[in-house]
Image 1 (cartoon, one colour):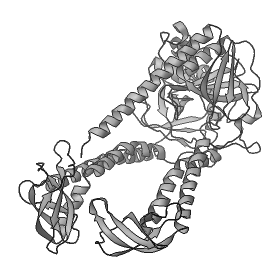
Image 2: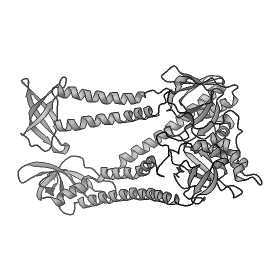
Image 3: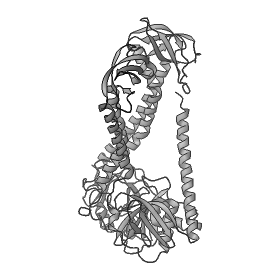
Length: 596
């Protein structure tokens, strides 16, 4: 099978994505230029209150004001003067150059705003220059709404099923006569008489010979001349309907589970220090002062780290004890995505050859003389064989079509000798040196084994991590001090150091969500929190933490020793992004590259 079209498709998708990113950046810079000239500008932005889902809308810049307008309702949120808490420079669910700003508006309401990076730089610059607090957020902003595209997919699926239901129930079951067979397409032509008229149609069939009777469903008006196979219709109609509805149903279920009702909306797990201004951190401030103890360093940096913590503290009411495994189900899927994709690709390319070889090797076979048809051959890529179509006459007098694997493309009309399966005449191979079915079957088996070995290796790595964490949890705990913060994607990270080793050096430990209830509030106590660690506090080691007996904080991966710039991004993402936004012309990044 030729792999060039799929490769071209992947390349075209990459070029399209790059082109979209360039266009988005150019349009954002044009908007900034219009603002500098005193004109108004708008851009797409998604806004959410607290941990509620983001809602689509548009952000309007006018002079020194920035206002977000909901796309569906008459809801507006004044962002002018809001305080920037943190920045996620690699948020999930957005485009490649999107960022997510965490803002605070009265009365201590945390907002999340996702928009294009250069538009975000424009907003951050405006917020820094604005005077006065913004207006309180309208109560309707956090109201749950159904996604329009989700409802549209479910409506399409319902229309598809209802249409087929009408066509089938409004028609009738008739006994048709097979007039012609198309084995290469697993279909046949049938004819039947209805209301004194003869109707003809093509339906799916399973090798019924010409002249045999076949029960089919004749359709209701206006498709009275069409018929379908009952078995395939019962299978394929619900299958396609489910494929249409699945994305929308998943979105609606997810949004409904995440919605916040006024009578059951949980309070924030901790009160962020938004009532006072915090100066932006510098790399020099991360270096402990002379004779500064680790606990004092943690206390000094704690207000900055708290700004990075999510509004819900990465906690779930349904799982008060937190994650039960160091490998989250989402990570399992991501780790196995590439091996499974390769496995599916190998099966799609090579599956016919191993199956054909198995049928011929285990069943009764015969030989016949055939002729290569004029159908276009399927050329294999690299060492893979080619497939040509052969028409041959079986000893019983029936004519069959079969694809055969060959290393040499014969000309149309050339006479060849084939070995075919008596019970499945559509499976055949050439006899002699031109046969390459064994090569194709071997390539398919080897490809499947390699993809399965790749997936097995990754499963073994995850299982090894689970066992290593279980072993570490049996070790004796040791005291530690640390901070809770977030990485560029908004996932929790614990910055831990030894309480007696000076100067202090932070170790970044990625954590599995959800966290045990009360973890974020406990970390808000700074060095006073009863934090313990199991495992070596060293780069590349797995570390299990526990906060005040609330439950284990399991590592999502090995700990790392961040350098000064990485540590600055973990503790003060807002200050880092503000420095980027304040560069020459505000958006060329010369003041510091955006976090990635």
